[in-house]
Structures are given as C-alpha cells and as structure tokens.
Image (cartoon, rainbow, N blue to C red; front, top):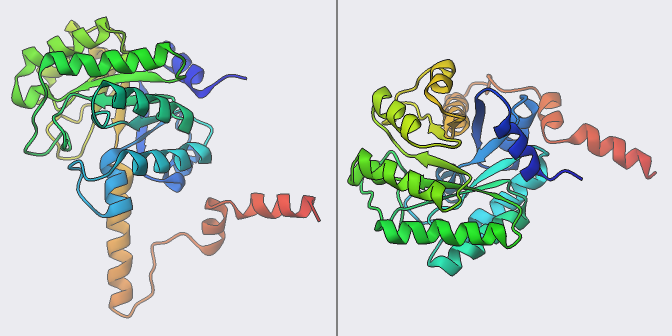
Length: 284
C-alpha cells in the first residue's frame, strides 16, 4: 500500500507547481480534496483561530495541533502538510513532534527557527534562534525521519525579517545539507528576493501567498519559472469563511433571511450524509 508520504514524494518529483490551499479542520480539508487539490496545508494560524479564537502567537499547544491534524488527515486521502511550529522545545521535543505528526497521518511537517513563543510570519514581534540551535532542530527532525517516521521535513526560516536575506538563504542552504526535504524562506519582500532565494538554494521550495502580506502575490507561472515547487494559500479558505459568516450573521441580525448559503441538500452532502445512508442501508 502506497503511503501518503510516498504520494507526496511523487507529486514533488513531477513537473509543475504544486498549489495547495490551507485547511483548519476536517471539513475544510475535505472541501479542498473535493475541489481537486492534490494536497493541503494545515495552518497553525488557522487552527489557532478556529479552535481557540486566538492569534498565532504560540498560544496553541502541541497536543491541540496534533489532535486537529489527526482529524484532518482522517477525513481525506490526499497528503497533508502540518505546521509543527518550533517543534515545541529542545531536540527531543522536536523528534517527538515529528514522530507524532507522522503517526497522525501527515505527509510533511514544517518546523521553523523562531524563538518560542513564535509569531505568524507576516506579523510583528518575530525573533529567531541562533543558527546552531536552528540547525539542531532540523538535525533532530531528520533523525526522527531516518529512524522510521514516515514523513517529509520542511525546514522554515524567519530570519529574513530580523537577520536579513543573506542569513535566511544561508540557513536554508544549511537545512538542506542537514537533510531537510524542502525549505521555506518566509516573507521575502520582493520578486527579486524570491528570485535570489530560488537561485541560491537547491531542492523544493515553498512560496507562502497571503493577501496583503509581505510577499508579492505572483502568478503561478512566474513562481514556477523562478524555481518554486510549492505555492500555498494558507489563509484563503479561512478568510473566505470569516467574510461569509459575518455577512450571514448580519443578515439574520437585520431580521432577514440568511441567503448566500448552500442549500440543505448540499450541506448534507458536504458532511457525508449520502455515504452514511448508503452504508447504513448495507447493514440493515
């Protein structure tokens, strides 16, 4: 039986850009699969927002992210990338995080070099650990993979915001030397910076595309030509959901009909009633 990690390896090996939406729960992941996406990304920002109604400032725990991830991976068949934050502690914590995410069903875990508590990559107040500690985290993650965790390692650096682009690129190159499967230089601020990152770091690279964030929202063809392999829209579904919920709540509050929602049959289909009824009939 082919694992989802093997499926992800094949997706990364084929030509073209791998485009992924963000997901924050089992339903949003299922809708991504239903829409035809080959993979999706569990965003820590989005999980913190929807599970706790709190900002992405290190307030959500390893256990809460893991439980959410287990539900997400269990709802779909496509490979899911999981936000592993800083690894939640020292090298042994990092190994536990990687092993736990692999058991939960993730095909890839993203680990970053921020000081805990971390921050969303496109917000203020970020700080990164020294290069040696950042390397230790990735080394521990790679060790967990080599010791049997069936998962890929995405090494992220937030050093661009605090130490400059040169240091961020140097860290990405180091992470690859240590065995990371792919890298993610967070929040480059221009197309030229993105181009330089792609030109100086080998291996699969991810572009993080956030509306009105720090990084330019470039066309897919241009990202691919630069050398990016993955383009992720981590907050687009969440942003759409917040806008739609506010609108329907305002309509109800004004005494009107909700409007703008799927009908009840479509709602039942989205959460799996047809399949449940068919299976229930089978056992009658």
